[in-house]
Image (cartoon, rainbow, N blue to C red):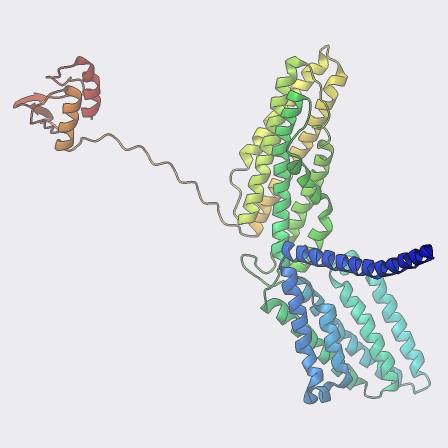
Length: 502
């Protein structure tokens, strides 16, 4: 009997644990979701502002549906305005403008073409009308679907082509049952334009997010990451050659990896930036393609760095007599290239013309030639090739990196010319040291007393013909080579000569 009661009690306890376990799991998931949401908001607060802007835009355009006068003009087509805001409003101003203009223009052209097709299909009579409309819909949909395969059209006008197909098909098909096809097209166009205008105004007017600025910052940051890696690599390479192992600096050496996957982001931002009006220091029709070129070169350089990054973490062996020379050449190549890239990144960020990059590139080329001649010399000597092979690979990769650094520098110079970057402010020249001047009589009297040990009450110096010292009533003329008379200590004569020199 007691065992039965225990079993029942155990079943009841397990039965209570099950719902409590579900509640705890649900609570943990809610806490985890809140933690992720907080992290997203802290990473980029603009995401929170964007969400609020979308809610505001949809609320504003929904008012058309709530007010009877506006609803009477547009009817059920009012919902197209709400739908337009939902599909058009994007994170950046450029993306919103691009989708808005694409949708508005495509709706206008497709609606006009659909009205024309409707009237052409109506001419032969009612029986032939569906056949003619079907042919028009087939031709338009097939032709525009094929145009979407063109890379340039797909990059900038893919959404417009989709909306053109959708609008033409809807207006053509619904116009077969509704004789007021012109009114239908007009309502559809009006509501779409209202939705596009609302989305664009809210996107630009309230805390705008500019795709051009994001692209500018992304490209500059990628170039700087390459520079940080190369400078860190030189330190790591020295540490490997000296100690045979790699210990620190892991974060800097891994920062370049994000560049390998940033190509699609750069292309998207450049495409959106072309739609944006002038803002800040970015003019309308800013050379955004040049940023893509710099980003592409940075990615190619990052791929070489990807291969290069594996060598500091392996034990590199080289003969002792040439190890220091190899270390110096590789370190100079890496360090000078890193400094050049960081100078270029700083120039892009500040939008000033780079002025101190060329010396670093020249120094890196000189180090590359030095390493090349060094390796050629020792390859010809009785040296184990397997010992020099890792060093030769590192040197070869560094030479390729220098080539890309030079190309990046040329692209940045071209960008500075096209975008009208400002000239860099020249560094202030050091002020020349003030020439020694003759002190005032009272100060000079104290100085002479200090060095000469004379306690006379009168010590006066005058200049040009009357340059003299009057000590205790006696005047002594002083020239450049004279020694002040009356000094009690000969060791003070040189100090006195310095004080009164002119």
